[in-house]
Length: 235
Image (cartoon, rainbow, N blue to C red):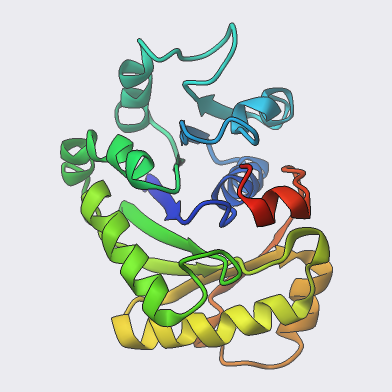
């Protein structure tokens, strides 16, 4: 069965990094994979900057920011239609982390509504070190706002808590505690915990409840960002 996964979340929560990793892993397993880049607000760290790597790994991409290849702003809607019309095994929508990003998804509401049950998942990517995501209250508030704009309901949380160049297993431990509370209060499961392989393995060795971990995904780092841009909001 085709699977469509929408990734939403706060600015710099790691949606694009996760989208690229999920796509590469799926393609490596022989699955026909498409990534739809709807992040039109982040000009510094774009998926389209990694076209050669993705295409070399047999990942198909639709993006409005391609230069000289793929979609443009004018033919973007037609290109996105291929996500629903063509025979993909996995389609990943990478959505910008604000109202405008969520609204860009809402225009395809009827297409998503026409999907058969079980095809669509909507994952809220949470980094508890980002503003508006530090507590369960803030996570749930932002989730509700993004759901309203996107006209989609979150089906799973992803713990992607990190401090970029200063990351450690303690980041995932902190994220586990906060997201566990958000999961219990909302009834939304934790579907994945992600992070650099060495930190993820250290975190998993603690033996925490797998209900609040989900399926671990070790990440390769494709997006290179500095702590300064992360802290001061230049991205």
